[in-house]
Image 1: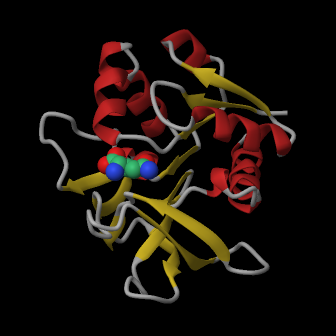
Image 2: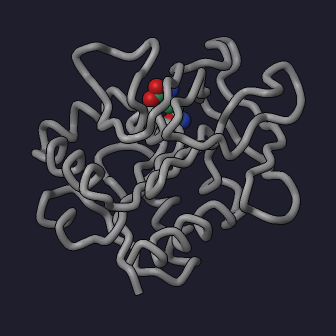
Length: 199
Ligand code: GLN
């Protein structure tokens, strides 16, 4: 079985560890470079992307994570994790660049600062069944993707209808919403599948 790490610097680490454990993989927190070395794949949780970027640098993890991403390690980023995987961040802090990896431009806090959180239906290509009951918390959206990236899902209704909120590029997967908070394991299962096929 693959071992999947959760970047455990800040954010909803525990919820991702629990969701992964339910998918029958070994899941463990990653706080140190040695811990990164021992995982086959990584989840970057929701939280605050500027804080995650700052702590990654302080814990000596920024370059190692970036290198693993470039070397093909599967990574799933949720919300702040999506921001960390973006090639370009709008409304980001220039002194805190993301890891990058996905050819996309994301806008932080895109749904409006007055709307702290909301829920919407999202269908995701490659995942069967009902649309996701997606929870967004000060979430980004994807303004545009480049030729390397594939749009997997958009908001289907409401004022944000049509906005891109799920993207894949090869071994990298990102969602603007938080499947780890709703007990719907289908995104984690899809990621585990991707990890098994990469291994
Ligand atoms: N607004 C946060 C950021 O910019 C993301 C919020 C979240 O991960 N729930 O990083």
